[in-house]
Length: 422
Image 1 (cartoon, one colour):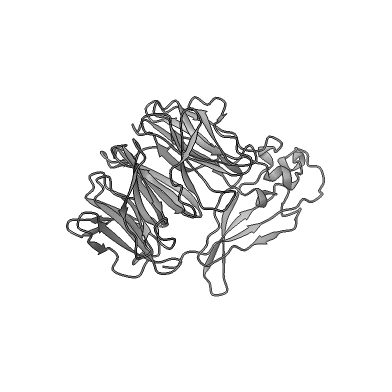
Image 2 (cartoon, one colour):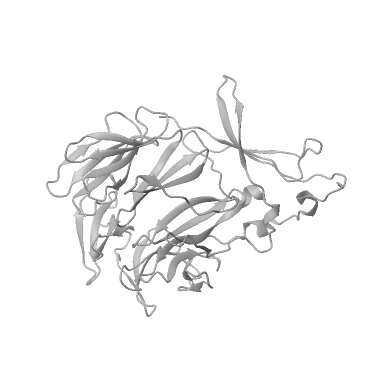
């Protein structure tokens, strides 16, 4: 199905005007250089240590991405690596100790390898094959191994491998000879979702049996289909599809009976869904008017839990500790870059762990976007993202800039952009 095309209108530049009786934000606003506006810290990740006392993140605060730890209590970040040439991205703590997995390429060649960092700071390349790219695919349920995808056998194809974390030997568990994209393996290691792209929007979705090597196509019609997660008991695959609908909906495919049922629809695209480690919660992402909204359902009660309060900001991403007592989330908006928080689901306490906005920028000078709609030549309603400067009014007009995004497959989003704010 066709996706909505979103145009972004940006209104910038300042204008002289008479002094009002009551000072406003526009009167006290500063002007900034592009260097100042671009100099915000970027962070990613948030893997809990086994004792939940700290989190593992990536940050470019040094000018290039390195790994850091940040205490869950919200204290000072500590660097684990100090690279000045190649970006280093955190993957995860080990499940039962403070060894770390991270990924790194060779000075920007984007051929990433997976590395082990020992507790003494030494590191080892776990995927040393020259010219081969490796991607982490998650820990096994028993935490004795992890999965990774690699094209070391054939540069054209990505196979799935499993690596034992006692001796770091690996074995191929799926040989990909048909150019499929790989989904996440079920917890019992019995089923693997496979995706066969048709075009930039549509794809066929399959379930592959690791036991008897059989493969079953799930979708009946050409449509956009993507695997999300297996049910906690491993009997069903949840997936998104826009088959028969303007918007992507969440479906449940029963593996034994090959039956399908619709489990969630919204008046927007459902963009993702997953279960937490022990299946207590199901997290679903919805692309609502060009920004993420999140629903977290407690599976036992079939009811959504309330999200933390974030004044003037939107929660864009969440993840959970393995015991499902703590949740990390990123909160930000079109007017502010996202920061990382930790939230205690039992006490409802939340702690901000990062502060990424350049301290030379006054937060109140930045502009919050709004979605507006206007009619096209044929009457079709077009959505656009509108950034109105604080100093712009009907009486004091200022010049405008129009930013047209690439389409029709792309979409502009209500997220922070240093360039647009500048």
